[in-house]
Image (cartoon, rainbow, N blue to C red):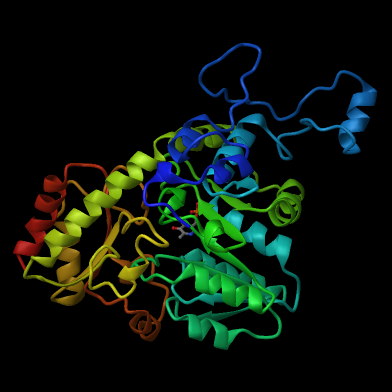
Length: 408
Ligand SMILES: *Cc1c(COP(=O)(O)O)cnc(C)c1O
């Protein structure tokens, strides 16, 4: 069960993952093993390889008879600190950090799938993930079927005898649709499949899919885990077998590993994750309410609104509505572009999860490669705007949007 406040996490969650205390404590304390220098802050180990006391020790490390560092493609203490901290926050046994969110998804597919296997995925998906599935994995004989995210019956009906992996993002980008993860995990397991959840929008501060039955959690650490738009990175969390052996094996061999510097940035990002996610969600809820009252706004998409179709999942699956709000303006693309171009504070960029509020026109950017029909099916209209609410004053964000909305 997900707790309503982060500190109510059951003590078992902490013990199972080697961490001590509640969520906020583990976000700050887990993972750092102090060196003999007695440093208080986590050090960055900028070293590509590690030395051995003797030829015999080198042989033992390479043979796997002795644990310890060999080479930073395999392990690095700063990267490991980030992995242990994130594993603890997601209530997973193991985490493997990757060079990007996309590298995390690729490593999962390479580690767990083979030619002939099928993926069953939600239709609303990060653009590069769709491309990875349809263009690149398809070349190796791994096909993907797509279903509407929020309908568990559609998922079950679409499972093929060769389906091996169910994959989703919840809430979706940009319309914030959600799926009941407990039901989806149950469906996956009844059919002998694994469930992987891209938890980028919520982070473990708001939703912990492994506690709801998922087998794998995937992150683009680039977004909220960093939180200040500095570094690209990713991670996979799950159990010792799937992540510690299969996914780690791909990382160690194929090499899309996270750099120690980026790991350190994310490690520091995790320390404030809980506070930031609550503040992002507060700001987004406030903005959603304000948008509802604007005459030029036709519809607002935010899980925290009672009219959201999966609003009932808040509190049991997802702690609050999160930091992303989307809305339709009257007047289509021209009107949406006018609102975007009238901003002076908000950043026109497709990134999200930053302290700086960002604004995007999905139909011509993140979802621009879809055909007009596919966009219509997905519900992404020409008047749709997505705002990833940052941590500036709410009144200033409203003023910035009001300028363009007033002119419509
Ligand atoms: C950004 C993003 C990714 C890809 O992450 P990168 O770090 O850019 O490779 C994957 N999934 C979602 C939901 C994202 O927003």
